[in-house]
Length: 142
Image 1: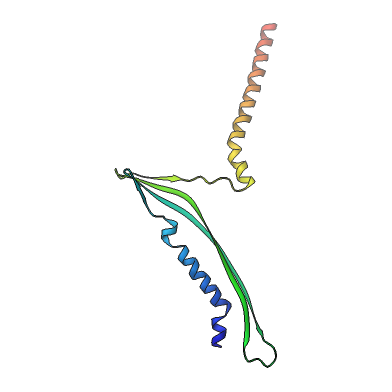
Image 2: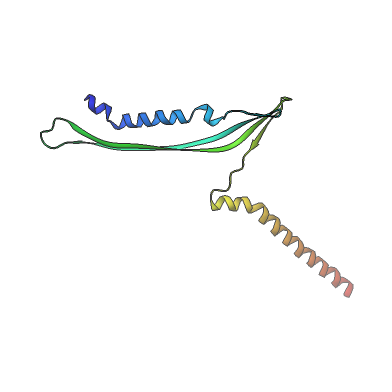
């Protein structure tokens, strides 16, 4: 029974979570301040992680006294810079966001929507101006 506890899936997951805890401490998310010429920059990051595991218990060949265990666990972490806190000597604090590049096609489309709307609006305005100009020229022709 003691052997089972040492090699159980729960034990593997517990060890994996302990390692994730060491990676995800407050100093990872809010980084070490950087001092330069009267300004202090404090990096702020976002951390996401995933983990998984699996295992099985099986008996060994007939007559063997021990039961066997096979399993494994894995974890992955991703750290992304989100912003910098800018602290000046005069006491003012400003949050300076770090704009990440678009991750998906939908993100790219959403980013370009303002430009597209501006172009379409400009096109419509030009068409309306042309139409108004033709109507004005038509009034003079009569």
